[in-house]
Image (cartoon, rainbow, N blue to C red; front, side, top):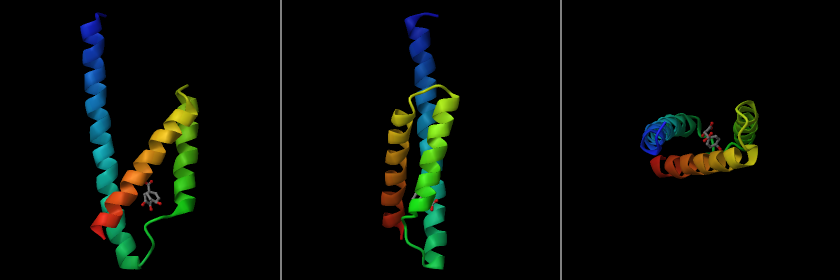
Length: 88
Ligand SMILES: O=C(O)C(=O)C[C@]1(C(=O)O)C=C[C@@H](O)C=C1
């Protein structure tokens, strides 16, 4: 494969990543509505731990650095919390 072809492949993956982040954020918006109805706080530390543990397990399964993947998920969770606070 040429450099251009490889970069084209990365471009497609990057597009998919942003689409997945958007989907995750949309779900968090809906979660915010449910939490609002049930008068629950935005932050659920036990759920965050489950998400982080799962991210680490998935990283190991795909042989990528678990700490780096967890750092990305920490950012995704923080993004959701900002979004949820804005929509409540
Ligand atoms: O599952 C939830 O309750 C969410 O709001 C989603 C989410 C996440 O991004 O995974 C975000 C904030 C919570 O503290 C826990 C998890």
